[in-house]
Amino acid sequence: MARSRVESFEQIRRDRRLEGLSIRELAERHKVHRRTVRQALASAVPPARKQYPARPRPAIDPYVTIIDGWLTADQDAPRKQRHTARRIWQRLVAEHGARCSEVTVSRYVAKRRIELGFKHIEVAVPQVHAAGAEAEVDFGEFWTRIGGELVKCWMFVMRLSCSGRAFHVAFTTQGQEAFLQGHVLAFNHFGGVPARIRYDNLKPAVIKVLKGRSRTESDRFIALRSHYGYDSFFCRPGVQGAHEKGGVEGDIGRFRRRHLVPVPDAMSLADMNRLITAGDLLDDTRVITGRPTTVAEAFAAELPALQPLPMEAFDPALILRTRVDLKARVAIRQCYYSVPARYAGRRLTVRLTATTVEVFDAAQIVAHHERASGRYVEVLTLDHYLEVLKTKPGALPGATALAQAKVCGAFTAAHQRYWDAARHARGDSAGTRALIEILLAPDTIGNSVASRDGLSGHQRAGGPAGGADRSTPPQ
Image (cartoon, rainbow, N blue to C red):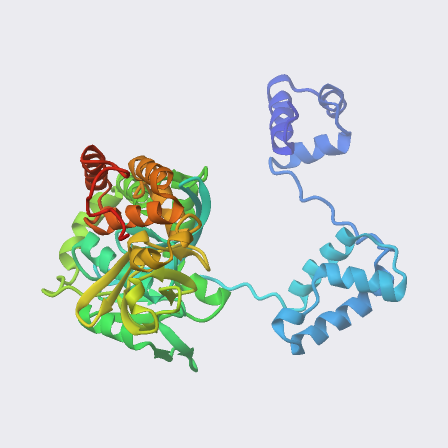
């Protein structure tokens, strides 16, 4: 293996000291020039390498004045419409017939920006965080397979700056309802509230960015902050602000690489969050570089400094008013959720959380759905359309609500067998009405076990073609 210059100097000096070899003999033994031997004998530290004048750059030298002019003019242009190195190379080729490579231009531009002072290097100042004094909050995106489908999710993260302990929870949205619910879950997880929380300029919290650190904040965010009694601190907009909450930014990337690679598979969002909770427990045992204790031990020392949780819980839900369309649906965040058909055309109240949609008529809940991911998704319950289907039985076979009931298991094989037998015995229209009467009797769609028992009992009592029972349509 090749030796470094300082190692060669050491060996030359040792041979001269122990064997008394001449300069010529040392040069022959170590296969170096006699000048190198003299340098080694004069000093154990090799001299600095000779600096040669810069070589000419015939490919780019004719264009350096042009490039410098473009870089200087860029300082007055909008930040997102300034020259990249590639754009400079493209213009040189197209406008000046340059025959230099893109790499040559890129290297010159990178070096020249620093020399001209256009590339600012911002130095970070190390910080000390007192126990319970501060936390940082942000969202990070990731992908997961839920029920075999690739879904984009958003991970709400709150990280305590002192102990480094973080809380993670996944949502299919990063809207205000998820932002608020994430805070409630995080405070309950920690068992306390930090004195101050750092944010970037998230839309759920900030309506408008004003001059300096001033912000126009949303009413719901102010209510959350007031309820828990902490202060907020907003970072600068853009990339510069990311460095002001580097703890949570780094934690998002670390957690994603450690626990979400490869892309995880889950049956539901709740199942995905159980995997994330397991990752949080595993992270409690890690030791952050440069710290003497585990994250769990550091958090145990920080916990007494957190502010206590308020006695009353904070409701993170958003209350909305919406009109039911002619398909008995309410449109919430570009998705559609069914309500009983009798409410078509009316205005109802919706209680929206990050995971559920509840629809109310005054104080009475009329529909409850798990929240959908994506856009323009329909979440329909077959029960909501049964009254309409009594008068339109021909619409049942192709109904979207029926297809969804089959997928989720609410419409069982027992339902299908009864329907097939009823249509065979009475005809399509009368047989379908007989099924609808059975579905309307108990909460059959809401309880598939009860519906199986009810259908089996009904078939034993006479079946679709059997005597006079309540499923027999009027003659």
